[in-house]
Structure formats: structure tokens, C-alpha cells
Length: 370
Image 1 (cartoon, helix red, strand yellow):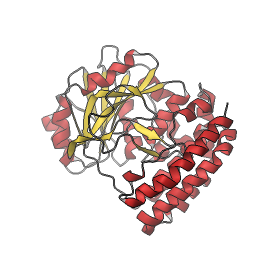
Image 2 (tube, rainbow, N blue to C red):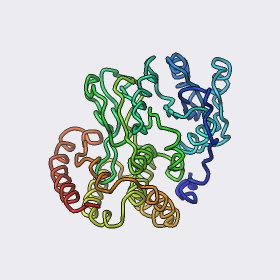
Image 3 (tube, helix red, strand yellow):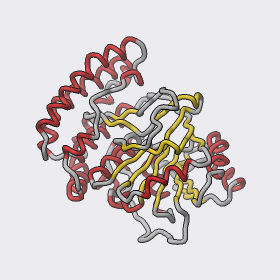
Image 4 (cartoon, rainbow, N blue to C red):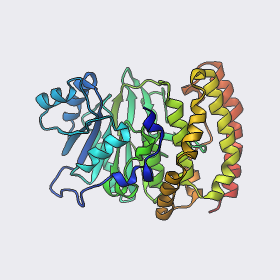
């Protein structure tokens, strides 16, 4: 896994190629799913997704699976298109390979640990009737308890931290379609032209925050990101912290901020970013102490790959259509500490830090007019 600590040249942009035009007689949507030895999930996923109403194709981007999952799909669902990557390209790389083979102008990315309700796709595509909408995302329920929400799009904190919107709330909440800061990578759709503009998923991220980057880079280019409440997905989700999760999440958060905002904005954001360091270090000390060096590895991952970071930054800044002030208005000051810290500790952290972040966000918006 050591190789994934280094960023690829141009943040993976040059490695993504697309056909010049989608097939005009082809499907309304191309559903792309990454498979990495997920046969136990495919037993539920494949019958569910093929029961979807609408005109679509299903593309499985396989990361060198050896568990018989591809053989199962070929035997039971031969209408599925399979892209064999031969090795683990990560979430971003595999999805990009799947997108290269898509025949539709709408790309739908769906996790293999999901099942879908029959009209989910029709409802996910409905907001695209508005030509300003670039991305849509589903109402995602917790598979073990479908009366509770997993997420209804994602909230992006002013520091770049990203959290599920509505986690563990009743499924009846968030009944209306509305703009959200970011889509959930578990189930979302994007116009092909936007995916091409941004160069697809940033493969240097490897894992975590790819969908946040895609969302914010689309906002930067003037597109809207919309939550579709009648598009219902069930997600086998549980918050887990592997030995390298902090490394990838923190490194990618730093990369995203550097690539997104103008330099004066980053200077104004410094107090906010420093306070976020206090929060994230506090998490590491209380929840991930055995992997505390990951924070330093995240810093090194930015410094050691500075030219690649700046190349991606130049692309984003050259294509921007909206101001940093508009971008910042899509952020929130609130962190839902209850998602990572149970009981009194989470409540105490919210009481201490959220008012400070509120103040810093207010100051930032008062100063940033560019």
C-alpha cells in the first residue's frame, strides 16, 4: 500500500480518457459500480439494481477480484458490462475506468454495499431537467435499520471536514429536494460533461473525499448539486476507522482546500484550519492513538507532492465560474461530533467548538468578498 501515499502526476487528470460523444441511442444512464471481491454483496446488489425501472446499463469495474464474484455476475446477469482492471485501482481509479466505457450522458455511481428501490433511478435523474443541475444524490437509508437515515447528501464544514447529512435521524426527515454541499459517494449521478471537465475522480486521493472534491469542483465551475429525496437507497453502512483512514482523510482534506480556494482566502481561513487541527488531533488522541503518526504522514503527503497539487490547482482556478465567497456559503460551521464521539464527550465538544467555528465562519464571510 505504500505506493498510494504518493500523488500521481497532475492528480490523475491525464490518465482519464473518454469517448468524444455518448451513444445518442444508448441508455439514459450508465450505472457504474466498483467490485473488489464483493461477491457476498453482489448477491443482494445485482438482483436489486437490475429490478430498477428505466433505460440504463450496468457497468462493473472490477479491481482484480478472485472470489468468484465476476463469474457469478457473468452467469446470472450476462447483460452486465464488466471492465477488468486486473488490479486494485482504488475507488477513484476503478470508477474512472468504468466511466471511460459508459454510453450515456449521465453517469451514476453506486456502491456495491447497497440495494435500491425500484424508482430510485427515475427520481435521481429527475432534477436534471434543470440545465443548471450538475449532480444529484439519493436519500440513503441505513440497511440494518431502514427507518433511519444514513445521509441525504453530505455537509461540508468550513475546514473541509465532510460528514453525513442527517445521520441516524428518522427516514421521514429531509422530505424536499434542495441544494447540498456535496453528494454521497454511495449513490449519486453527474453529467458526463462535468466529469470530463474536472478530469474524473482525482485518482491521487485513492480513497476518501473523492466525491466531495468532485462536488466542490463542480460548484466552482457554476453547477448545482441537488438532493433527490424520492430516490431511495439502502446502504450497509457502519462508521469504521482502519489503520490508515486518518492519513487519507486528512491528506485529501488539505489537498482539496489548497486546490479549491484562492491564496487570500486560504490566509483568511488559517484560524479556522488551525482550530480544525485541534479537533482532528483530539480525535486521534482519543480514538486513533495507535496510528497517531498518520497526521504527520498527511502533512508529508502534501509537501512531498507539491508540484502535482499546484497542477490540479491551476486547472481548477482556470475553469472557475464563481467566487470563493459563493463557495464558502455552501459550507457549515457545525460539526456533528455525535457521529464520531458518543455520549457526553461528543456533546461537550459540540458546545466548545461549534460556537468558535460559527464565529470564525462569520468573520471569514465578512472578509472574503472575492
